[in-house]
Image (cartoon, rainbow, N blue to C red; front, side, top):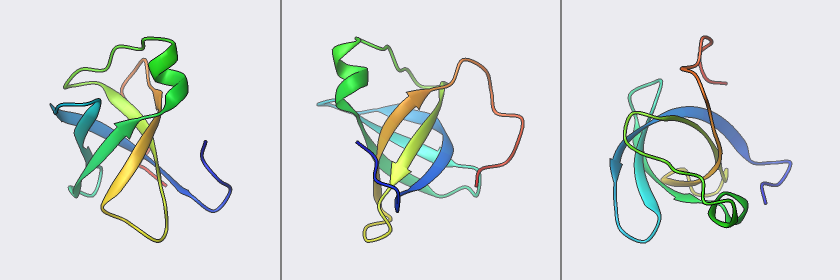
Length: 80
């Protein structure tokens, strides 16, 4: 569950890794690892390379995040 002090970004899924991990690319071109949140796992939400997602990143570790939502369309506005 994302906390109020977490940073949220829109990202593009670039690569699927093992154990529900993905390599995502932010709008700035920075790549990072992201895992799928528990709610998305329970709902069996399919995430594949090419999908746009919303990730939550802790301000203490900017190298990994949690996928909290899959977007149905490509984002029209830049990430926050």
